[in-house]
Length: 76
Image (cartoon, rainbow, N blue to C red; front, side, top):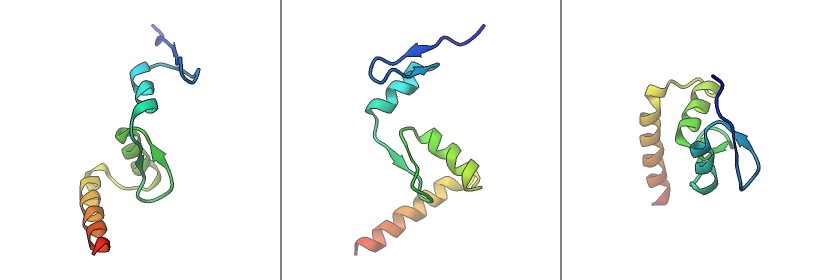
């Protein structure tokens, strides 16, 4: 059985998961802390970091905490 394809009424793109795609039109973006890439879904960002920056997913929460602490230090 092949996946059902849906055509987006807003952009015309054909997708297999209309809910994931719809989310891309109305959600906030999340930026990669290591490069200029920006994503509309956190799971795509996590996949990108693991695939492109060779960082294991077990380190992501630690790195996010360190990033927040660094931002707070800069604001002073």
